[in-house]
Length: 241
Length: 336
Ligand SMILES: Nc1ncnc2c1ncn2[C@@H]1O[C@H](COP(=O)(O)OP(=O)(O)OP(=O)(O)O)[C@@H](O)[C@H]1O
Ligand SMILES: [Mg+2]
Picture 1 (cartoon, protein in one colour):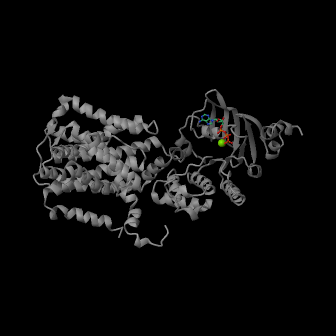
Picture 2 (cartoon, each protein chain N blue to C red):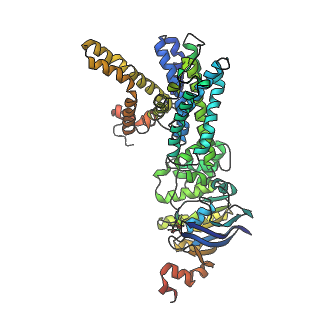
């Protein structure tokens, strides 16, 4: 079942086409990898989905509903959570309060929000840090807080923007575990990641873009062996070897 | 100890006018309580929600004029102002916030400054309604200060409780989220425009109530007094930051300190300069004494700088730091 799709998505910044006619469909429950070299438009696609700026053209559908014109907070309420590549902790609030604020998207009372937040912190493995101010977390845990906060809004679709970047090898393994655990909960995931180990091992399907345009899509093996992808990442001479 | 401090304070405030019968001190305490209300409102929108208002006088003056006009135009008791002043202030805040919160950053602060001036000019020019610079004079309801004192106290307690309850609810978490990061807040399903409006309207409501109280208590208002940029709007900011931005009891402490400081300047260091001038017969000192009272804005400015440098989180926010400085022995060897 298709839970999410974008059709002919275009975004111009001035004269620059950051996203140029990208279309894809995401199956319910899958981990969908979105890859591309630096500046290829991945974050911009996330920002379009979550409506941080309007699309130049194209349409976005979630659960058969056209959400292209939804405001950012409505996107969250509709069931799409996201993390930020450049993390945005609520710095002067404790980790727990960060997650409580998120939990209020689904519950009304402080008591329920606190319960939901604690449960989510436990699930994401950040419970031992709950009293700490968000701004004093090290980067690895800030990334984890991003995921925890998004999860507390009970998303059906989760957009992860480079949540594994900057993690050390052991943190990387726990991050992968967490993402798979989230998938086990029935949450559909679109993941942007540069670290090939992560994206290739956990994605069910991958969509590759360069200069805002689709260059390949398919299973991880297919995309990894696609000449256009190899060229985009390693330069032209490698593509033909 | 910390838990009981508010109750102790409340108890002291309740018995204060019964113990201290000097009407000058009672007057100052009424002002303190009024500033607790205004400071709590400012703290709501600026301290907790991060939208710094430079125009609280717009709401204060609207509340004051509501009470004044109810008395002068409708011939009713100005106390009706207490029922409506908060709402008329919201009626000013609503369209203002609706427009200005579409913009981020310094726009709100600048626009609130403009709102302050617009309101002051309207009150000055629309003489048919407001009597312009002549102002509005009403007969005071009570000769004693004690009724005013308890009304002010009730209002102050209500404000502090209201802030406390709101900040412990979904609204409070949403206000803080907006202050910390608007993009993150939106991604968490928070309609930032909507919740900024709620916060602003709570602030306007409290400030408008304080304005109505002021009209009833002082018996006289004019545009320069209740729409004053420095004596109301800037003073509100000072009450907020001196006490501690984003703390429940910050505005309480700030109100005490700032009313004292304001009075200190207004009276020329409690008559020190006047006395000195009389003693020495120096003409320069006589002139200086006159101007020092008017130069309190300058004093305010210096105070802001000092507070921001020494106690960036205000007296309540930096309480631990103050204690450590004052009683270094107590915490020796303890690493914090
Ligand atoms: N708000 C913006 N205004 C103008 N240009 C932008 C804006 N956001 C992104 N761009 C441009 O759009 C292009 C795509 O950027 P984007 O951040 O989407 O890339 P990315 O694939 O996420 O890259 P990275 O892997 O480095 O995160 C870049 O050329 C970038 O400079
Ligand atoms: Mg990016």
